[in-house]
Image 1 (tube, rainbow, N blue to C red):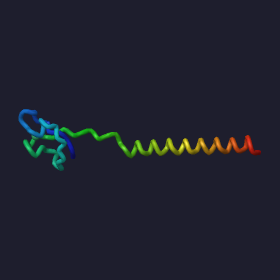
Image 2 (image 1 turned 135 degrees about the horizontal axis):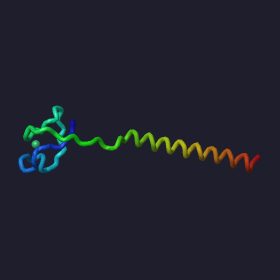
Image 3 (image 1 turned 120 degrees about the vertical axis):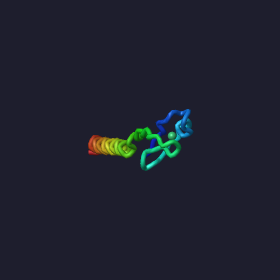
Image 4 (image 1 turned 180 degrees about the vertical axis):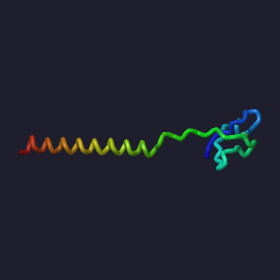
Length: 75
Ligand SMILES: [Zn+2]
């Protein structure tokens, strides 16, 4: 897991620097304190899917508009 040292900044250099620590056991390598987990960044894959869906709906709308124009002006 990744996190920040939960120790007092005066007692641990890693807590002072707010360095992101990646330790599998969740313990600060400097002082042995537990890490405060960093909240996961906004799910990027979810965002990407939203953007993809938006693009698809815009494309669909454009196609509908094209078909509408085609039948209005050509036929
Ligand atoms: Zn520490």
